[in-house]
Image (cartoon, rainbow, N blue to C red):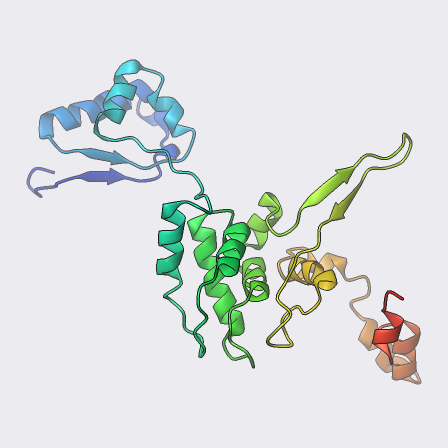
Length: 253
């Protein structure tokens, strides 16, 4: 470190340290303290929990760790200066053929979809553009961001329940509890390949990011069955896969 004239040593992913290989947490922390004292090289730790618990077990370790600077990062609030500065910089990386100005509605949408996590926000924005590029309408809308989030953050979406809000309803004794899914409001303008109806949009977005889609298809060989029928079109009509007048059959009236 001296021969290389190292100015600072940054150690990332400290939570992955195997303390049993160092003889325990105290031995490692003492070694790092000696390193700082002897070489005069500042150390910069980056870690997720539970590494912070290792630093607070001893007053000496905690005092030394926070002597330079200690900062706990969390998701960014929508009205924070950090979020607005980040999203304004991110929004400049736009590669669609029509530039979409950043609005409060779009800012609110990407923050809600990413829950303030800058990595999820970046991936959502990237995939939204990937879906829009090449379509008839390359403007970025709330629906485009929602679809991009479903592709980029499908697993995270399921664990954090970002796109859907499930409300548990208590029923009388003897009946099962059920959940209702709140409708997600979407932009109805633009490309017809985007979700157009709010009553369907949340389901479409959920399907786009589903990791168990194959298990949900009850009859994957339905069209093969239809091809073997005497009248495939009539067969699909009977199975209600093909609708001659979907507006009248699916209307609420």
